[in-house]
Length: 78
Image 1 (cartoon, rainbow, N blue to C red):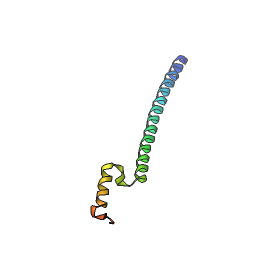
Image 2 (cartoon, rainbow, N blue to C red; image 1 turned 120 degrees about the vertical axis):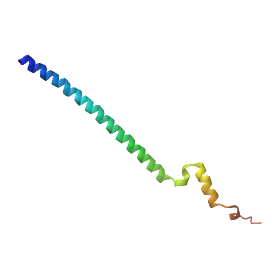
Image 3 (cartoon, one colour; image 1 turned 90 degrees about the vertical axis):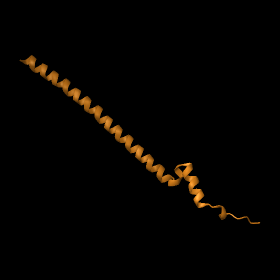
Image 4 (cartoon, one colour; image 1 turned 180 degrees about the vertical axis):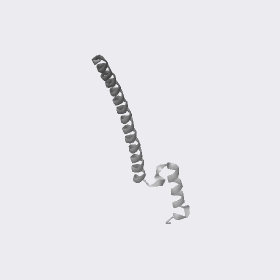
């Protein structure tokens, strides 16, 4: 009877240790996913705030400059 009790406690201890390890692994994965997602969002917001919207690519900057500067805007002084 005592041997069965010890065996049951031993088995439950292994089961508890297995669940503890599983929850620790899943919790760590969730924490890393949250950190990665928040870092990605923070960097995106930081880049967006650092530059105007048209400055993200060369093509956009060229189109913006063409719209703002026309040939008749510049006249020779002579």
